[in-house]
Amino acid sequence: MCLQRSSIAAARLASRFRQLHVLAAAALLLLPGLAHGQIAPLIANVPARHDTSLNGDWRVIVDPYDVGALDYRDRPLKNNNAFYKNHKPQSRSDLVEYDFDTSGTLSVPGDWNTQRESLLFYEGAVWYKRSFDYSLPANRRLFLHFGAVNYSASVYLNGEEIGHHEGGFTPFDFEITAHVKPTGNFLVVRVDNRRAKQQVPTANSDWWNYGGITRPVTLLEVPDTFIQDYLVQLSPGSTQQIKGSVQLSGSKLRQKVTLRIPEVKFEKSFETDAAGRAEFQFPAGLNLWSPDNPKLYEVKIESETDTVSDDIGFRSIAVRGEDILLNGSPVFLRGISLHEESPLHPGRAWSREDAQVLLTWAKELGCNFVRLAHYPHSEHMIRMADQMGLLVWEEVPVYWTIEWENADTLGNAKNQLAEAIARDRNRASVIIYSVANETPVSDARNRFLRELIREAHASDPSRLVSAALEAKERNEDGHTTIQINDPIAADLDIMGNNEYIGWYVHTPADADTTTWVSTYNKPLIMSEFGGDALFGYHGDPSARWTEEYQENLYRHQIAMLKRISFLRGTSPWVLKDFRSPRRTLPKFEDYFNRKGLISDGGEKKKAFFVLQQFYQDLQAHAVTRKLAASR
Image (tube, rainbow, N blue to C red; front, side):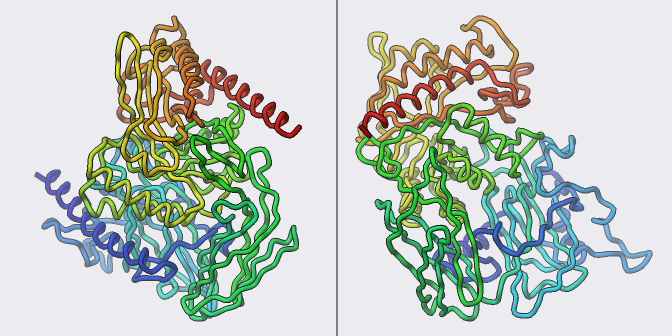
């Protein structure tokens, strides 16, 4: 009875939080750059701001029955029994049934699943608490920034709620200027990673549901009127024109703003309007960013009251028929998919060092492209890709069986997409926004995805939009024809497709008699293919789970891929083995998806070298073709 009541109460509580958040998010979309209620618009380029880290050990209370949020009648607590009040007994007879100060700790950033063995499979509420002092100077503002919290976060400062956020992989801000004290501040965050059908992602997925404050937490101090957001990129379709915008936030919104690129002695000034916004476009001769030349320029934006500096690359991306054009020239995307799991320690990846190791493995494989599945990865991954010269497919977790008819679910998906774009639209490496993965075709699903596609194109027309689809096969006389005819492909710039010939269907050799056709004159990225192998387990190529089986599968796949005339990229599944509760087979899986070309311990499997050779051959052919064209 208690379990049932707790589950129902948690659902009601989550629903109330969700309704408030969706309303606030919708208001923000209508009023870009303007604060609304308690939720602040995202602040661009957090690493360049005056910041104070709140990372480290936080006190935590694990709360599976939500006793810190609800009373025994399932009503929201508003008295001192609510955990966010951080109340202390006022006398020896005062009953207080929680105490952060004597509770254990968890590291932030970090998931709770791999920090405590007892929490490996835990899904529920955990309350985090951190104390801090902060003397805020006059005419300055203070924001609380979270890189990501999975899945929902209710945030309280000094016993008062300051906001709520849903979505486990995107950043969010709250302004706390009016709430912070010079000494004795206590910050409490209720984190809940319970899955639900109406969420994004939905209740069913094939990766670990890591709970916690999984990315950094920072205090951002800015002037009273500051540069809240900006876009500085090449104009779509151009390699010579810079186009962008600046958005101020504060009391003095009409200002002169200057854009400088010191290395090329470039400087332009313009005026913001009454809403603090200015848009601009002007010519600039710059060296273009590419995987072969990941050139980044220091770009300075200076208003009368604030200055922000960023390292930005400039490149164009477009499609022409079945070709993908990078800086006007055709490119083949030699890629790999990866989950955000650390190569350095168990659990969620979040650090610069995590990103560097993962992307170094991708470069060693011969990649010029990575598919960051199935949700926005950390900002460190995107910035590291900028520096290392890796093109990026970024994805929102619209995965499998979303509630297509639910308006709140669509609003949630739109908000996560908007937050990902707001964070990463100045990063040259990001060339594709993906709006879905392996979603079943239906009229409701098509309407849902078309809303996201329109949102992506409207918010950032300088990028391409894709989705990982599933094609249907037809078998006749021992030959298989697979036709890409998903109706949503008509709305995409690039078609993505996941297929598992040799693992979930057929045998590896059946790829030899498979032909691919398309209804659309568009480029295709084979966004997933592969099979499982346990590192160090060897045997006949026909024996599943062996490295030899995976190696053989890749050989047949590559031979098939070479025959697809409209194929312009591949991102096999997956770079590294990762945890998944769906994978229960003892010895071979043990709650890991073993499709990685690298084991969870960092050892390369035999298939790694098969794909590496394929990519080396593709790269050598591209270089030869480029040399011939230049003669």
